[in-house]
Image 1 (cartoon, protein in one colour):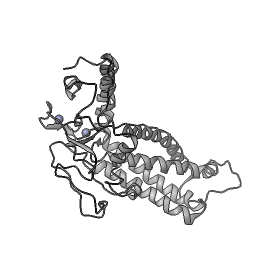
Image 2 (cartoon, protein in one colour; image 1 turned 120 degrees about the vertical axis):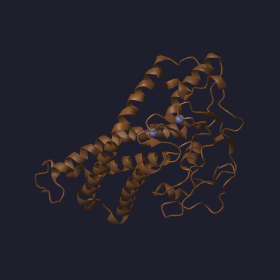
Image 3 (cartoon, helix red, strand yellow; image 1 turned 45 degrees about the vertical axis):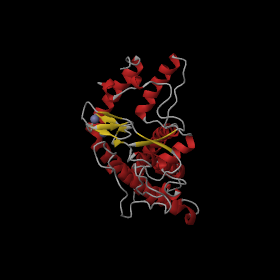
Length: 328
Ligand SMILES: [Zn+2]
Ligand SMILES: [Zn+2]
């Protein structure tokens, strides 16, 4: 059992626990508020901004794609199960919401889909002391759901292996949608505020509502854009939110011995991003990035692609690895 990490880590774990309690209790409330805001934002955009966007023959289709991706990925991020350790592996569905596999892609017997050229190794397993489930590595016990989640990231709603792609795509489309709203909507904001005295407000949406939604979009664009940048950076270095704090600790442990910690899931930023979105040669077609479709992750969470030559992380011993028991 490793000694307690430093007080910053302990403080972070306490803060994380408080945040989990708040989001767990208020989660459905936040989801309802966000849904109302997205609907009001879309109505404001369609009524006020869209009719004045230049080159409508070019811009209307991208605008509608952004709107359907925003709602589609939000719906999937909230409703798709993150993937619990005790559940059977998920399979591709037959309905239209599932992206079509490439014809030549393969499915391997160990549950890992698509990949033929990666160094895939079965995950090591432990037993969760809290719920008794067998936990493949990268699985963590969610305090709010009280279950073990494959490749657990955080709970708001619960984000894990099967809905993390929808969650990141949702954040990307929120950033894009609010950016377009702010960039194309500012002349209308001036009219709504009465600053263009020769322009009259001739829309069904009231100028007060438009002003409020504009300001909400401005704040969301900055806040969600920052979160998205952090999330994409985490994907590029192949770490979940939980792992980024664990790995910080491992780096210190390794450097105290004069070694360098190496994350064995890190295949290089481009490959990490390709695997996360499951696109490219052995994955889904690239158009799955612009349509709100369901896709399976490249793995079932019981095997992981690793850097060639590594069976586990380099620089940290098995008995030094942090487990969920540390955050009691
Ligand atoms: Zn558990
Ligand atoms: Zn959860």
